[in-house]
Image (cartoon, rainbow, N blue to C red; front, side, top):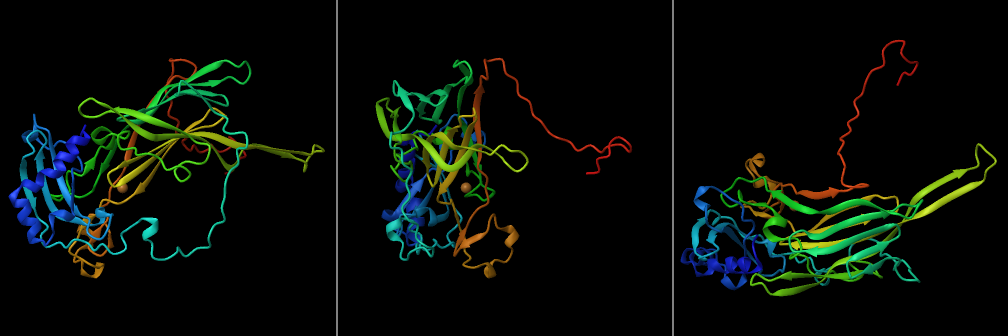
Amino acid sequence: MLSVDDISAASKAPFSNAEFNKSIAARGVSSSELICLPPSAGWFGPNEEGKRVVKVHCFSNQGTPNFYMRPIEGLVMTVDLDTLEVLKFSDTGRDIPIPKSTDTDYRYTAQKKEPQMEPLNPISIEQPKGPSFRLEDGHIVNWANWVFHLKADHRAGLVISRVMVRDSENGELRDVMYKGFASEFFVPYMDLDESWYFKSYMDAGEFGLGISALPLVPLNDCPRHSYYMDGIFATPDGNPFVQPNMICLFERYAGDISWRHSEGLLTDFQIREARSKITLVARMAASVGNYDYIFDWEFQTDGLINVKVGLSGMLMVKGSPHQSLHQVPNQDAMSGPLISENVIGVVHDHFITFHLDMDIDGANNSFLNVNLVKERSLPGESPRKS
Ligand SMILES: [Cu+2]
């Protein structure tokens, strides 16, 4: 895993390299406007064996905090993390302009015009008696029929363990899951270029989801009556530090129905039974470089656990010599669509794997995969036609 110290040292390493300084000067870029980052460590052959090696690429932050939209394309340094030496210097994009900063600032205060939609009236969900969950020892969550342990983790971000649900008939606690967490991400970009082939991020194992989870913004990230939990991690030199408010816990009511039934059309029973759906959510948002992953572990009173991952933030884009599609001689050769002047959105996937150690009514569980297959009825077998 790359530590915060590794990342900061690697991002500074190019500036003491003469070739690098020459190249950025030739592009008319000042070193004060550059932000350099190691995108993904990976492993690319035996000549990296026994070394801790990262690639470093750079962006210009001139005119925008959204430097991700202004890549210095084709400029890649391979840096040894132990010696901070530039092992390899690759400069293939001198003819590719740095995309403009115009309209790239995403901050609310920087928006020049109001969004073209009818404004929404204020909305809020009342909990006059406060939330219904209760915490023991700061980590054991009790809510409705659920009991589980919730903690922050440097690598996985959020870990749910010893999950139990109370039997509604006899009140006994029944095991559901021993432990669950996001075990890894894999984000390969579909571009084989010298400056792109290594962009195949493993965000949990290389950077750490917990260490990337900055404090949540009350009322915007999590609703009123949320409980906020800190993460306590270690710095690279072993000192503890607090990552404040990195997990929030809240009850969600989105106006949905959990269960209903009506009678009256066919019988004399006049029944209108409906119960509102209230769930409990444990949330974390990891800002891994340009992307923000929002993790929601949602508990339903019917015994279901939903895990949802939302993706937000900025794209990792590629600089292009072309300003419009008309200038592109062979569009099929591009690794993604031209999304703005001189900007390609490289096609890629985000794969997320989970460690789910289920203990449903004990440890003796099995996994069954069900696939329904269509079967034709034989003539004379059944009057069913469809
Ligand atoms: Cu993406």
